[in-house]
Length: 367
Image (cartoon, rainbow, N blue to C red; front, side):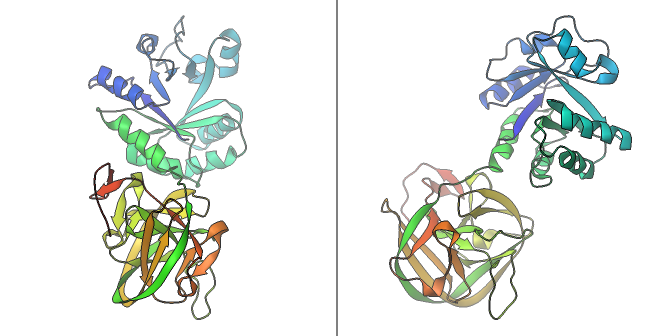
């Protein structure tokens, strides 16, 4: 789980409301320059003291962690010996090669490293993350906004352990927490039993081309109904008449639902270049990938009906062609034209109905 820290040192808006929202959203830490700002926080929130210019205050309580700039406050290890009642972390501002090396050293050896990068490039962060591979400490990266937080969460695929955001208004803590959670919204997959296969005439199907190569047991979830989807395989596996396209999923008819960020559904016809869609593997592990383009073309269609152990019925309409595939238990690759009654395929059963793609608890029938 990615860590979300809020910096309230320079809050100019309604500080009490921002802190209340942060507590309600269960952010991991609140960062303040004055110990008094930490006194009313509940034990569910890590209390982080990050002083400004000048010496440390005589009384560090109620801080759980004190982040220091060694040039102003001294080395964290020495401070920890003098103040064993609190943890200490190191702040490093990366502006050149020397400070980058300081950040790499801190990431390898310090329990907490709070990093601030002067320039917008993410290459220095990549270097720090690579240098810290296998280390036990946590890296918190300062970000300007929630969108940058999303990027930092994904740098080098692993991302920073957490981010520090200075909120400007109420609502940003909620958005930050959602960004952290959406990158790790793994799903519970079920085995569906195929109950019928039939030709469905001609229609438009969508190929979803992403900016990412899918893994061998990975694809996207697609279904005619929002309450049941089948895991459609990417074109990662060899085909006899064409080269592999591991970035592509021949996903299904253009009316079909698929999952994107924040548990929202989109019609395949709605996906656009630069949008995002949820890639899911055979174990239910998920990640958001960027859509490069969507190709919608007229093709013969095949309807697949299946049922879950709970009795929920699932339908998927795909292109009627041997090279279109879905995934079965254990990541087995199944050609859709060779499916028969009783074949097991992997799927997902979202429990909520949908209104403009968002999950909502209301009465709705799809058939």
